[in-house]
Image (cartoon, rainbow, N blue to C red; front, top):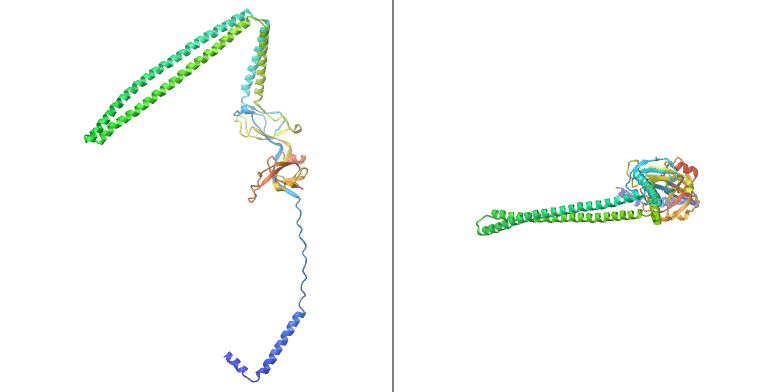
Length: 439
């Protein structure tokens, strides 16, 4: 219907003039609108120059680390010869100040070593008396006493030889008896085995002929096998008995030989002494002096051994500074721990050890100021870089951040804390800290 209406208007003879008028009017309005928009359009904005962002230059190096005393932590333990000993007395406790060379613990070997020292001192007294005796000349009574000792040694030798020979004879008799008994047992079992094997063979033939059952045949053959194993066991027992007794006899013979050699030596020494006491010569005096010197040397050795029962702090320290007991690892009555007895440190001067990434090391040198912080520190500590390490190693002071590179390569940098900071950090050994070093 619309389409028809449109066709009807186009077909009217008056429409061409009206259409032209409408088209002209529309064109004029459009042109005026376009001119007006162009004439009053806003001028394009000029580009604004943005200020250049300056990246601030980083003038610090930050690293994780820990606190430790001067000279690092010293673990005191017993000398190597006293490993496995117990601590009898612990003379210090955690927090105590210890002077250089001060005893901190006494080991349970002290009493034994003290007794050894006293014995060595007694031997010195004997050697002194011996020297005085030689210098004064031998008495007739001494000569007689030495003769008695000589004769006593001879009697002792004869008695020991008789006893040990009797022991050997007893062992040999036991060996013969046991061998005979075992041999009789072997012969009896061998006879049983022969009989059992004969029965086994006979029953096997009967079984082949159908005269007996397989069960009867197997029963007889089982007896033969049992006898064979008993024979093997008896033979093994005989061999073991012979070997054991032979070893005992050899040991007894060795003891006899050793006893003869030892007592012969004692007799020779006693005889030589008897000869020596009969005449006083300068060489006798010199010998007595040598024995005295040997006894005195034994005293010094015993004193040195006794000293090892006392565990002491190191003698050499920085400027004679004292140590502080940081931790006790072994208490009185306990075996010495693998961690030692106590841990000491010269806490009068504390250090912060920072693990600086190897890429930052060129920025670090001695004399730089450092600030140390940690959650446990109420305020930052101050210090100065004293030493830059020479060895690259794997990082040990790790951050709790899971994204941290645990394979980072670092170099240790030691920061010496000032006096005030050292006092604050004296009781915080091994505290993990963050070290910021100013370039």
